[in-house]
Image 1 (cartoon, rainbow, N blue to C red):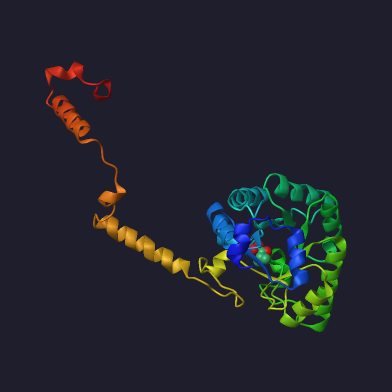
Image 2 (cartoon, rainbow, N blue to C red):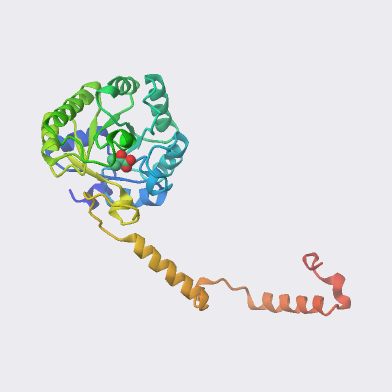
Length: 306
Ligand code: KIV
């Protein structure tokens, strides 16, 4: 099925659709999205899933990393995406320190992303240490996506944005974590910045889909940050990103063209302006002229001229 076929089919993508894709060996497509217009475009493109990632803290809100992102900010962006997307599967990140403290807090915040944000699932970062939270959320009927490898909320503990699972011990631990997340009830796992060999081993061992970002082609699906793909965020671009457009420079070009046309009075042109009925305009001019000449007809003028 081409992307336009699946778009016109209009069938909502669910966790079951994604699982069936893994079974059929069909790649799962996912991108991040944070606003209404992008969600509409993503949905029309036929994408399987939209992740309202806490990466929005960096690419939309300008934070240094994802740690400052709040539930309020996430819900604000989730609502915008949910209004724009009809068909794609919608997942949102639980922000830093909204699920690590206790399972009841994790459950409450996961519930808010679903109830207030209109999401279909939530994502959280970490392996075995998150098993209890995953179980609690899943037992409430909320699908949970895991996230292993380079987990951005742990950037300080990881010592920076580094590839994970490079030693055999680290890779073994990552594979175990993935299996623990599956056992805890996750319906999919994101693998970020891990060697392709490790991603392949995880993907073959799990019966749920793996979604890779910087983890090679062996994963069951791929996700990218939409601002990276579009070339909209140029503070830094991870090596695993492929830019499909350079909208940052295209936006700057458009802004400069607009500024130039306004300065040269070439914008707005007649086709961008509204005009009034010619007789109405003549009446208006006459009224103003009478007012400005201090005419005795002052009190005949409409009250708006007094
Ligand atoms: O927040 C995000 O965008 C993510 C992706 C990088 C997977 O978690």
